[in-house]
Length: 164
Image: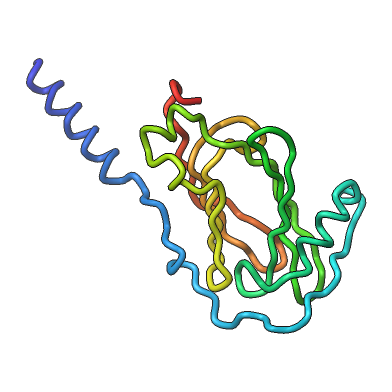
């Protein structure tokens, strides 16, 4: 009986590790063309009014993400940044969120300063967030920009409870 339980546990452990979805690569979500024109002014709606100056300044730059978007960012406290995504072609502003840094104890064990809080590229629709969104559930998050809709979560890996 003990052998059966042990074999079952080992098989279950092996299956869960094998089925664990690896983090996507930026090349998994390619963009064909990168917009080269003048960025459209952002269309500031009520929900973004408090951050209009930071959004305007941040969106007046070259394309940073997913072929025709910028990612304006600003501080929101110690170890915190907030962001939105702005379409450089039509000015639409898509919601982002606040991202707090990962716990220092976890960072020391996993690469320290080499772990970037946010990663994105002009030629990819993938945005990686290695942080604590809105100060909770610290982990490694992967979002994809969906045309006309905004960011969609495609994968998350929470840090162990002792690192939260």
